[in-house]
Structure formats: structure tokens, C-alpha cells
Amino acid sequence: MSYKNNSFPLIVGISSIYMHLCFSYKQDKNKFVSKDKLAKDAKVSIEFIEDECERLVEKGMAERNMFGELRALEPSDKIFILSSPLSFFDFCQKEVKKKIFSS
Image 1 (tube, rainbow, N blue to C red):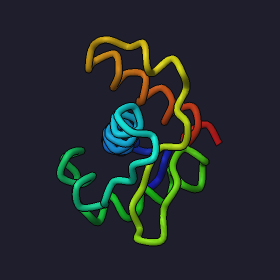
Image 2: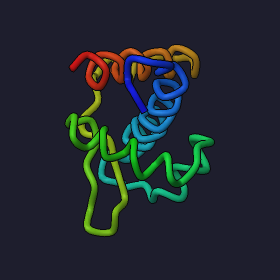
Image 3: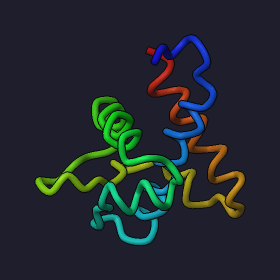
């Protein structure tokens, strides 16, 4: 899928994945999340998780353990002062656009 053409659904999907990784990090920064749980929570397919989590890892936004589980890599401190879920998602969307789609 091209990043330039019709990337809005892709941005929303990756942002949703990243948001759940950041939320998990906020609760316990040492906890890794399984791809199955991530797909269910982010409401995306496991196939989408496979492809897009690799992008998050490549861009230094997430890391993978030897079991294939993921966790966010030290998200910005700004994320911890956000009060509403909408501002939390908005922040994640901006991070994804900045780090993944700017290159």
C-alpha cells in the first residue's frame, strides 16, 4: 500500500496500534503485548498487525521480544498528561504521521 495514496485508513490503523502500546506502557512500562490482544484492542486484523508493527519497530517507536510481543519504546512524556481518550489518540496520530509518514 502506498503511503501517499489513500493513507488515511493506514494512519488511523497504525495510530490505534500505537495508542494501545502507549496505554500499556503507561500502565506498566515493562509489559509486552501479544499481537492477538493488540489486534483485538486496536480493532484491526492480525495481518495488519504483522505488517504495521514492523513499521513501528523499524521507526524506533516499538520493540519486539523473542515471543513476537510488542511494547512502545519510551513514548513522549507529553502522553502521560493527556486526560481524554480523544487527545490521547490525537497525540498518537501526530506521532505516527511525524515518524512514519515523514520519511
